[in-house]
Image 1 (cartoon, one colour):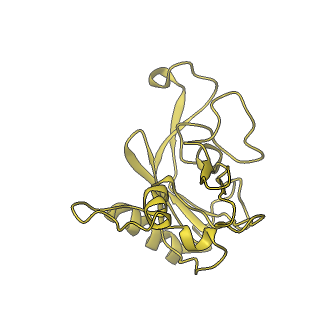
Image 2: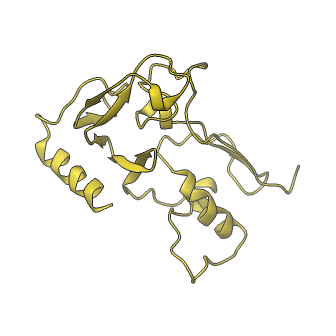
Amino acid sequence: SERTLVIVSSDNGPWFQGRRAELRGRKMDVFEGGTRVPFIAAWPGRITAGQVVDTPVSALDLFPTVLDLAGLPPPDDRAVDGISLADWMRGGGSRPERPIYFQQLGVPRAVRLGRFKYHDRHAVYYGNPMNWKWAPMRYQGPWLFDLELDPEEAYDVSGRHPTEGERLARLLDDW
């Protein structure tokens, strides 16, 4: 217990049981309620205890982080998505602003950069479907949400921030 890195997280938000606080969405969609999960890391003497960081990270960051913490270089025979969180975990390092992408059933659907999150037009599921293939849905969007002011993703601000919406739409299209 004194020499082991322990990481606890989840791959997505709750299904139709479970709490998602006041966030919109659930498992299988790209709203914050379906993607925002806890990430807890402990490593006595190596990671500063008691830190709370609200900067979003991705599960893709785990591989480069573990390599970095182990003192190993990333493989040079493939692209490695994600960034190392090792400096953050140690209580230092800068937190670069970078896009985080979200997909729904293998299709790119949203991107977050800083406080803004853009969703393209996509299926939004309703009700309590037992099988996503037969779930009630409607196509909605595109939207731009200001997660700093509206973490529930309830108010589209694309009219107030058209430049941000266009920039994020291009990032999502490029991805």
